Image (cartoon, rainbow, N blue to C red):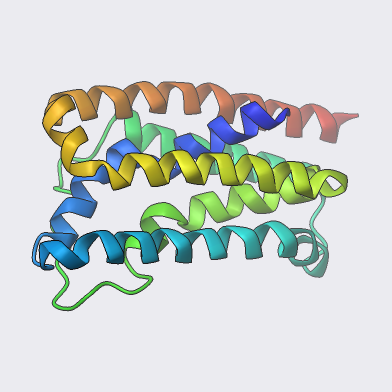
Amino acid sequence: MGMLSISITLLLIMDPFGNLPIFLSVLEKVPAERRRRILIRELFLALALIVVFIFSGRYVIGFFNLRQEAVSIAGGIILFLIALRMVFPSSEARTDREIDSDPLLVPLATPLIAGPSLLAVLLLFATAESGRLMLLLLAALIAWFVTFIILLGSTFLIRLLTKRGLIAIERLMGMVLVALSVQLFLEGISSYLK
């Protein structure tokens, strides 16, 4: 995969538009002057997790003696399940997460931005592109930066796009992610059969 497709895949998994309402609801009890500072801190914590997983991915896979094909197939299945949740969201409200104090690492940095699905895909890309880790890092930085900009402008975007617009964008992102997950799954299977 090229850098652009990796960036788009990571951005789709980070799902900044789908996370906008959750971020706003978690931070609504935080005083307005501290909201931006907390948001920036959480985004940088997520970035730290992303960087750690990029550089430790091949060691984790090596430790468990996993084959590249198995990781690719598993990554395709995980992405497919994530995409299905984006296209067909559950009837439960996703914004019912309440926190009494300032969020630190949980639930904003992880699992909302750098969640298990993103970290699993980073492991997959890190092993598949082991000779091009700097390319993967750059792709992850691009996806993170776009997420950073979207979440930093959350109040404006919620007013501009409305909830219906955000739902439409999230479903469209889910459809693209379905196609990417199927491609990843098929690449793993064809590589295993060879």
